[in-house]
Image 1 (cartoon, rainbow, N blue to C red):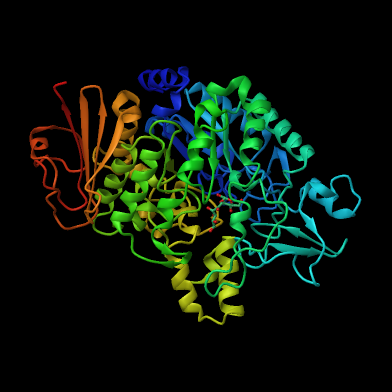
Image 2 (cartoon, rainbow, N blue to C red; image 1 turned 135 degrees about the vertical axis):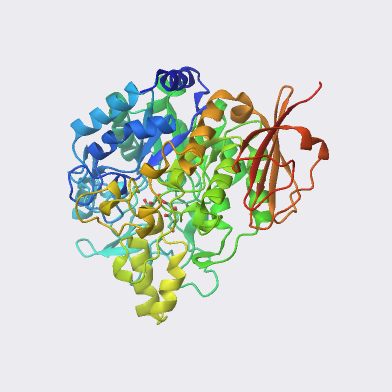
Length: 570
Ligand code: TEU
């Protein structure tokens, strides 16, 4: 391990606003690295790859769920919060992962899934057993309304948000699948049990949490019908559970009970679909003692029409308008997270870039744009290699409950032709992100020696870590440079942000400023050369970072990124 890198990570961790200059890397364990040849990634596999992450330079690892789970939603359905699924290893492996990360100056944040549990969690088994069980009220149970569901809400993974349980003749609420019953946070015993479990993990040495759909935990107890959009079968209940009535109270309570004794050192990231800028400011204003930052979803909702299964082309003007508003909204108070990718989103180079002829250039341009915004950047495994979407040709190749349920619903219930349904799944399905990490060009991609749980992208022969680490102009080395810049340049971590050219459909342009220093960031979102309409005085500025080997004043070549720097006379 290079001491230079370790020192920079240690310095980062010593300050209370350390997260402003930190970069987080998300590991989706199932697809990261398989140490025992069963075709599924595991914790020992992650441990074997820590030098890779250290070389990249990331400060924090976010680990998607490794808890005991029937794996209906790949671990986002937990049946034991205090143990590791044997598929991934053991608690001893996790302890070693923590120790090995800490030894390299990195932190670990665990995925916390407490809006719901698995239907196999003992809490739910007890709750469903009788109307009078002491844990009955730990979940949302309601008697049938006129012999049917208590309200019209639909579930995220198709069908209604309610399932009838024969044991007691009542329905339980599940915003995702029937295997993911929602916990009732109105009940103080539920909250206490969750806080106790969180403290147990922090005592074990983890450094914080990425908190799954945490803005769904407070629901309007009246559970009113939701609006039915277009020709949808079900109502949209989100108005009654997104950032619901008691959400800030719950998070402040969690802060008191769990975070406050170690607040400055922890990283707490709330995943919050549908969160508004104004709410995000409240959630992340340090003075309010709630969370460090939130994941918002606005910018990843711009390239489809309501449903993610109805893709449309991204309009760059919309992207700038959206991200620019978040930059502005959290400039004075609060803090942004920055991401293009995660385990629920398509691969960014296939989505907003060009995964053909310009794959490397566009992957670097997208990375450069994101990482020079103000906020904490998140990298999803394989993004640093410019990994692409996967072309699945039949439904049998899919593994994701969301895609499989949608396919069944569309073909069986709605009668859509299979080829049309497969076509609508292609762009935004979550398995795009979940094909195995491409470590090498060998069979198994260096991910496994066995049969992988999901197909490996055939382009692993060409796109892989072994080919990129150490090759100066690779996507990997570009990410490495971006991370180092965030560590060394306060202007990138904390400088003011100002969006330029809001109406330009092809150029993404903004400035950052910090004292006398100013940066101009320019990105060409296309293959046509373009002359950006910015102050010509920038033509003489120095190039801090670019994705072409040479520098040609202000004109932008296909998918070109330039980060220019100059010092202003004050
Ligand atoms: O995702 C919540 C979420 O709202 C989405 O990103 C979700 O994948 C999308 O609505 C589906 O179209 C979180 C997790 O990240 C996801 O993997 C889980 O499936 C989900 O919660 C349930 O725990």
